[in-house]
Length: 405
Ligand SMILES: Cc1ncc(COP(=O)(O)O)c(C=O)c1O
Image 1 (cartoon, helix red, strand yellow):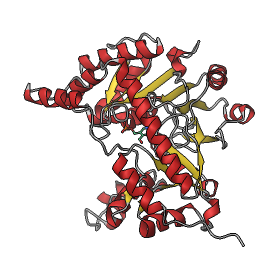
Image 2: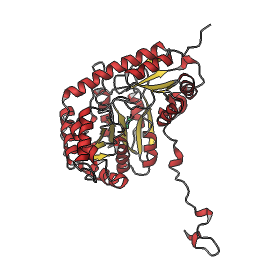
Image 3: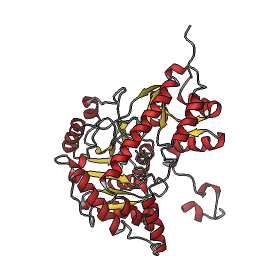
Image 4: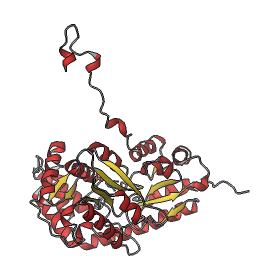
């Protein structure tokens, strides 16, 4: 500012023009969302981004229309409409046995994306480290940069995507503020087992760290897998931030309604960040969310059943086309090993698939800190309709594995 005032200098000298943030320079645009744009450009079948191409349940669409007609069109309470917070608390109690106070322990946000960002901004200080399992949902990298955390990555290794407890223990230390957990997991389909969560819990207790857990795929479970919220484990209730959303469970990814559940002291910090980031999520859609969360238990049973059938269809299509698939136990993605196709890397293969074959998938490298670690992987989503599966199958049938001599 001193220069701006020095004699003879124009008021807006080039050297004081606003420059771009160093943080924004440290990450790229989302590869997943870029693949959706490429799919549109090339008319490809989009098996990249995780949004359903079938309708949301009629009753919750109707609830949204009714809320708008009833003039619920102004700001909701910044931390969420009471009806929705009450419904979140009662569902969390019914599914995980955890009692939370909707007045002091829930913040409704613009999707789980904002819930994660607000939570990290609320707890991270410069110099703090966060432990992140990799492959990871790609938002967590920029979330760490924007909140000022240094990520410490711990590998989930195929075929079952297990982690080495010693490697996890080595990633924790005095600077650890939190571990970011995602179960059921995107992109691997891993569902963390109780013993694994207990191992994570013991480290959180030892190092006084938070668990920030993204449970957005909690109802997409296959082959008897069971979802356990780490907040339900002894000692974790008040050191866990549980993140969830309407997006996946009710097929409304465009509504942008999610939430963070945390102890009162943590929630008050999250609420302040959230208020100044976004003020609040869409008021009528929060009312519809309250209706959604009170759907009867058979809604979730049918959802899991239908997704299991979609998973099996997609596994069949990919396997027939020559992909080596890692069978997911949860969420709605299939990680594949594409080394056999003989392309130089995952990005080259994904480009070939979208341009020449007409199918969009996500290059594995976008889920790893070091792109080389994901160069033999490609991720496909199966939250799609029968029509989309048929189109994908017809196109992927044109793919040929290189002939072995
Ligand atoms: C693990 C995970 N978390 C969060 C999100 C985004 O959730 P929302 O649409 O609620 O912001 C996604 C979307 O794909 C995801 O896979």
